[in-house]
Amino acid sequence: MMGGPNAKLSESSCALLLGLAGFAALAFYLQQPINHDTAWYLAATPRLLDGARLYRDIIEINPPLAFYLTMPPILAARITDLSADACFTTYVFLLGAASLTLANHLLARLPDASRTYRWGMLFAAFVAFAIMPMPFFGQREHLTLILAMPYLLLVAVRVTGGSCGGRTAVLIGALAAAGLGLKPYFLIVPVLLEAYGMIVRRSLRFAFRPETWALGTAIALYVASIFLLTPDYVDFIVPMASLVYGAYSAPLNAVIGSMPLLAFIVAILLYAVARAIRPADRPTDILALAAVGFTAAYLMQSKGWLYQLIPAIATVWLMGASILLRNGVPNRGNAPLHVGVAILVYLLIASQTILPYRNSLADDLLPVVHKQAAGGAISALTSYVWVGFPLVNEAHVGWASRFPGLWQLPGAVSQLRQPDSQNPGTRQKLLEIERYTVDAVVEDFQKAMPDLVIVDDDSPYFGPDGFDFLAYFNQDPRFARLWQAYVRIGEASIDVGGDRRFEIWCRRYAGHDCAG
Image (cartoon, rainbow, N blue to C red; front, side):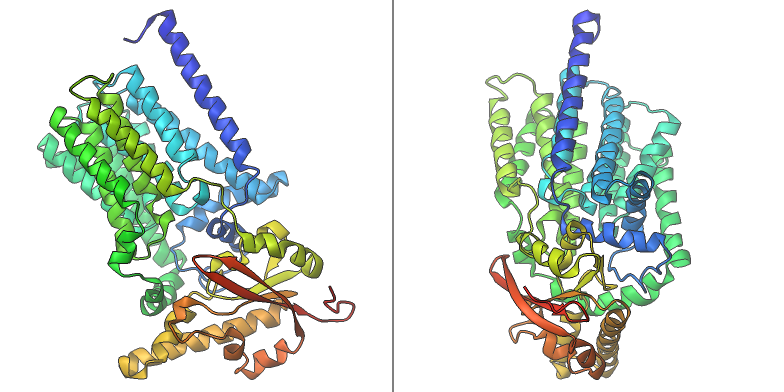
């Protein structure tokens, strides 16, 4: 029961412990490198704020919301003279703190939620925010999880007959739009939850609440803004990506095989047993449905990249926590649930390999960049983002390209190698993409003349025939002339499911002979 001095002390102790855990986690992450995808946004967003044209001067396959969400820490860095990495890390923790504050408010409004359940779920959410995404801290999926969590809990409050103030509900809906709008696949989640709510409450009116109006309106305004503010995304990026981005797709069996399947199987069995014991556990239902929606989003992307599973793994974890906390102290009837939750926790932790982000290529090349490109710029001929990032951020040098990596090249080249597999119209479009890529690389070299260039020796995304980046670009006379200024000074490698090798080229000019 709530109330009394002992209860207040318990509340204060829990809040203090959660706050201390948050500060400890923040101090830890401030010492860690930012992952490559996030590092790209931290490098590209300042260009956008300085007047660069998104999807022309900055080429990115994703819609613009991720750039918008990255603007606050970049502006804070400029105002405070702190590093963008530090401001971004603090920003993510502030978002997490706001999300947990709203979660606390909502959990207190669940009609049958005990104090143990409320604080247990808050600590479970903290683990989901600060520990489980450790190698992928700050990824779009991580932000989605943080921003959407209050909405998930608010749906749970609504289906159990609880209430929430209109202004708070609108804020929660807007935050959910900012998180779920990062990728269109994530909108599966509110569709599932709203359908569930209408079934449980037996009314179509359930879907017409302040938070759903706010979520829907914000998403609609965001979509409209893409057409109005960044039409190049629709006219240029989407058609190009639809033709070439399939090079990164994996077969469904490989995508499923990349999942922590045993953990998901245990979660399904655990949920089935829990629902047999407690037939009307609405909060757990909501988290289970959210896990289904986020897993569907992962499968639809067809990549098999683990970071895309962050929201699914986190909601499975929270579902397990909800089952454990809703069923109280173990007894003969529910002991299997507690054992199941323990197994699920172990499997989720093991499958995630919760370790800080590391990029050994960046570690190896950092001294070379400091020596050969200090105060200048670097570039890379590769299709991988992790070749240039977070190396650029850690070395504090410029990035001499509009691309984070030449992501469009594998799809275009591999298809053009099979001339009989396309109709003339498709082939012409692929040739245009190829021509655009070469022109863009040449223009970026002419404009910035990077001091150091990292050249990918190959890439599996080009198919079994392999690919020689330098031979390919040197076919263009403009690039060949520019490349005469460069000398090979070494190589580096990284183990990413196989040994990947990269050549290091340095630009010679007066006073800089690239000598070791």
